[in-house]
Amino acid sequence: MARIVVIGAGMAGLTAARRLSQGDHRLTVLEARDRVGGRVLSTTLENGAVVELGGEWLSTDQQAVIALAEELGLRLSPIGLNFAERDLIGAPHIPTEEHGRVSSLITRAIDALPHATRLRITVEDLLGDVDDRSDAFTVVRRRIEGSAAVPLDTLAVDEVMGDYGLEAASYLRVDKGNQAIAEAMAAQLADLRLNTPVDAIKSIGGAVEVGAGDLVMTADAVVVSVPLTLLARLRFEPPLEPALRRAIHSIAMGTAAKYAAPTEYAPDLLARQSGEEPWWCWTGLGSDGHSRRAITSFAGTQRAIDTISSDWRALLTNAAPEVALGDGSVAMDWGTEQWSLGCYSALGPGDKALLGAFDTVGPIVFAGEHTSGAGSIDGAIVSGEQAADRLATYLASSRTVP
Image (cartoon, rainbow, N blue to C red):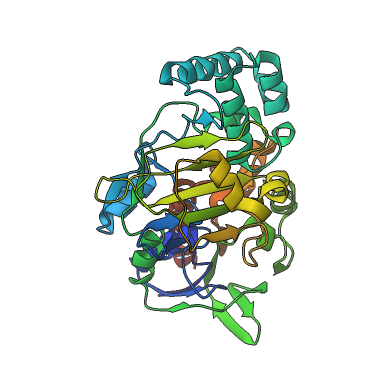
C-alpha cells in the first residue's frame, strides 16, 4: 500500500486524488485555502441566482469535464449563449453569419502559415495581417485577448484554436454551480486537509517529505497540483530538473477579474463586448431554462482590470442600460487572490515544446491546467487524470524492482 500526498484541491488535484483513491493507496490531500475548487468558485447571490466567479464556460466538446459531472450525478444545463458570439457595446447586433465569416477568415490565415512561421509569430502578428476593421473582427480581437488574459503580442497562434472558441459550440454549466464538481469529488476522499499550505518538497532516498509549516509528511509519492505562480515558489530539494524549471518560469500566467450583479428581474439573453478593452458582460439561463436574475462581467489582462475594475457597476449600466441592477454584487480579482496570483496559463510562441517537461514518471508528478496546455476546467481535469496514471505507472514499476 503506497502513501500518496496530493498538493492542491483544485480540479486537477481532486481529479488525481479521486482516481488514485480507487487503488490500494493511503491518500492525503493538502489544500492551502479554506475551501476546495481552486480557481473554480461558485456563489449564490442574495436573490438566489448562482453565479461563477471563477471558471465558468463548459463546452459540449470538452468531454472530460462533461463525463466527470455526469459520473458524479451533477446536472448540466445550457447557458443559452455561444461564447464566441457577442455584440459590440453600443453598436448594432452582429449576425451569426458575420461571426462565422470572421472566424473562417482567421482560420484560413492560420492554415496558410508555414509550420515554422506558425510556431514563432504571435496572435497580434496574425490578426494585424487580416484585420478587416469590421465589428465582428473587433469582437474577436478583444475576445481572444480577454480570454487568454495576456496581451496579444505575447500569445501563440495555436492558442486561438483552443479554448477561446473560433468554432461554434454549445455551452453548459452545472446547475448547483461548477464548484459542485470539486465538492462532490472532495466528499469521496477520506483525508482532505484545508488551510494547509505546502512550502517544501524534499526527496530522500525512495521517499518524499512534504513540508507545510510545522507539519511534515512522508510519502511514497506526491502529486503537485498548484498554479504556476505558486509552483515557482515551492522549495524542491534537490532542485527540479532544468527542463522543468524552465517550463515553470517561462510559461506566462494570465490575470483576470469577474464581477456578478443581481438583477431586479430576469433580463433577456445578451453578450456584449467592449471594443476598446478586453472585457465583456453577459446574462444566461438558469437550471429552469429561464433567464437568471444576474449579469456577469469579465476583464482579462492586467490592463483591463486596472482600467475598469474600480467602476464595474457604472460600466455594466452603460453596457446594458435595459438591465435593472440590484444590490449585493460580488467580485473576484484572481491576480490578487493569495493562492492563485493569476487566472490560468497562456502559451507564447514556442512554449508548447515546454509542456513535455511536466510528463514525468517518478515519485513526484505534476498536474494542473498549465501541464496540459489548456487553460480551462476541462484542461485541469485531463491533467489530473494524466498525473494519476503516470504516478500509478511509477508505483507499479517500483513494486517490481527487487
